[in-house]
Length: 376
Image 1 (cartoon, rainbow, N blue to C red):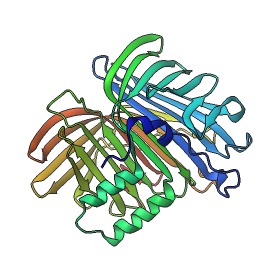
Image 2: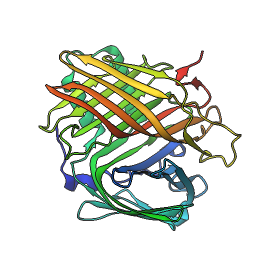
Image 3: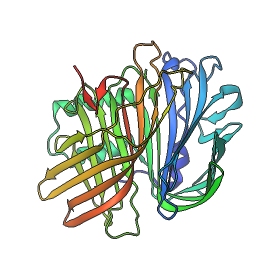
Image 4: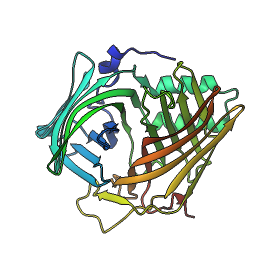
């Protein structure tokens, strides 16, 4: 189902700033994630731009910018910046994010231009929207259309997601070009494996159990890879069983296959020991020495009739951001992972067996998990 055209991106992906009379202004959060992987230079990049708290009060709201790059040798370069509201320009009419050292502008040719410097990284990128954006409503329609039965658990989870995510739009394909400078070295970027999502709502970091989401950064010119493969699982309880979501594979003929969470078995093993960076939470300046526990391998396995898939995610580099609950009850880990995904299976008669770079975001309460298995 395609409800929108590329030309609609500026309307769909503007900041959804609430009214000044909203009684949950203090819980407001909204951000844009831009992700890409250049297979020639072997550069992975994640850029995040957000606003948090009351956007009408400089004492109770602020902007943030995050950069997470992995260079060809696997070295992580991360940086974060807090931006006072008086030095930030945002608008409900477009997705522009204009600060002193970083800026995102949306052009009439349906291109995001991103420029800035954060710590030891700088970037000057043009990201053209190639495929029409998809909203949370559109994704739900697609998923429900695939379902033969709707369970009580799905309805409950959908209601929880409705409360939690008030605005979610993704652009499943971006053409990314320009350059990034990592610790003094300039790398050209030219890749069709870009992705963007825009999320927002009013919630306390300590309230949700979290979610797992990500996208395999498929090469559309490679016949051995699908057009797109992405996933979202929202947890409304302390285990994987209390979750809703799934994995969507889109073939080159436009046909999509949805593997729902009831069809997917998720297993985790080992402990990641590679490159890992921990960024202090946005609302706190100092954290004790802390290293989130990341699995060495995460496996998605599913069988649905004649279709099947087996995906082995292997984290290569991890950036963990730790924001705090507004009431101080709980911290949350946002684990941003650059992975390789060994993707094999059969979908609609097409057989896949390929290793594909991947962005994997896992959000969970801090200190409540070990290798992502919840403790009692």
